[in-house]
Amino acid sequence: MLVRERHQDYPTEQNDLGVEECTDHEIDQQWSSISDWPLDFLAILIARQEEGPTVEVKCGRWGAAPVFLNVRDCELHGDWNVTNLYRHLLSSELDPAFVGQYLAGGPAIYSSQTIFSEIRLLTERAHVLWDVPYDRLTFAFPAPEVQEPETNDEFSDKEEALSQFQRALRKSLLSRVSVNEDVVGIELDGDLQSSVIALVAADAGAWEVHSYGLLAPGRLGAIQAEMRQAIARTAGLVDHETLYSNYTPLHPESDRRRTMAVKPWSVLWDDAWGVLLEQAKTDRAMTMLTPRMADAWNEEPAASSLPSFASERVREAYAERESLIAPAPSSLMGARAMQRGADEAMSYLKHGIWPVSPFCSPEVCQFAARIPAEWRQSGSLLRSSLVNHGLGWAPSFTKEETRESLADFALKNAKDVFEDSRLVACGYIDGDRLRESLERYNEGDLSEAAALSRATILELAIRSVESRSRGAYMNQVAEQM
Image 1 (spheres, rainbow, N blue to C red):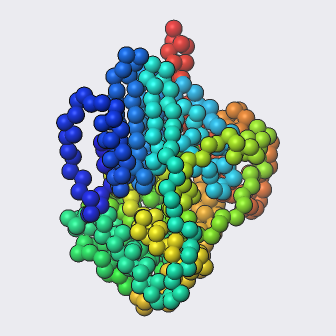
Image 2 (cartoon, rainbow, N blue to C red):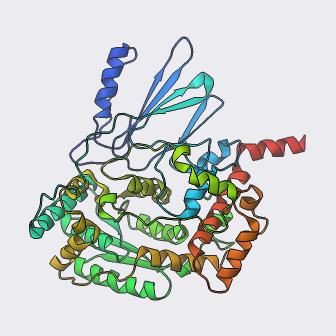
Image 3 (cartoon, rainbow, N blue to C red):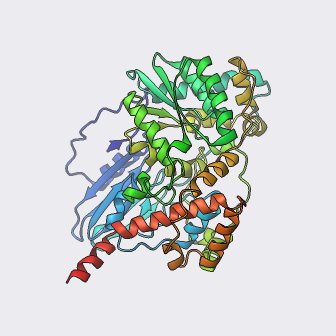
């Protein structure tokens, strides 16, 4: 049993169960006991049977950083870094429904399926049976847990709600950050949620709080810098920031293009953010507080649509995605928050940093279910928290503005990526429409800039798989014979 999370209320010393042979009933009792564990974990049971061995894997009920699985030739491989599994793939083929989801940029269906048919995701509370002789993985999920209603408006007094919120957030921080840590990191973007977390973290423990921020190009970066400086002064943070423009994403000499280890759901700022995470590692800030929020704190996302250059094959699969992609059960955190956590965890872990998202903790999620949706989704409760710390302003930029600005900057350095495009050759993108979209972008039309940047990352990802996969290696061997 591997416990992958820390919590001050639950010691995680490893105990040897001392059971080598036991009855099915005893095994069921052990499984039941393990399932009640409140932290994120992986538990593995190997059973030797006459018809062949079986392996069962169970996950905790509150996901933190999920693991990807691949099974091939009686070997089960698992890794939180999906690119480490590329070498086991026989094919670089992508699932067109997932390609459509990614290109559209809207909320994705949270599922144990992935864009690769040979790779599965160990989602929260998953119970996986590996039938070894047949190299087959079977996923099952327990019945959904009873959840609180979205809101029962328990609080009518906003001041009382604010006091309870700050207590819940403080408890979440103190529970998940070791009391032995001298330094704690905070991802400080200058937005509401990261600002509130920074202020609470600075008062919550004896540790020194270091903040890390990535500044967007142009006007947005100037606004971010002003907000971050105000928070850092008020909270007494040791601040580190860098310009996104110093680390040109998608440039031919960038890390992701040189190493060809690109995950399909990468974000544009991975390279620059990696520099800040290395700084955090140098600072001994091995736990990073992130501003990822549970779904209850956000408004429903606007409907998304495919870009003009998506192929007919992708359009057809995207239209049928709800019947092609089996959803995994959600939780109080919400499916969008879990999907984002699954997408982002690798960026932290590959630098040895453990991400903690206080707004996705059970304590804060349970609090959110007790207040009116308007207080959560409008940001009014978070603004009140800032006012309590003497800060009466609010961010005047949106995540959408930031993404458009970053995408525009990135594409200027990636004009060569679609030469001899593999996405076009494999039928995921229409080549003529792609050229038309790129021409419009070059003339100053940014309406598809974000979609073009996602297509660029997907192009690099499929090339990464083709260069590293087992199928590519076998083809090279065949050519040499």
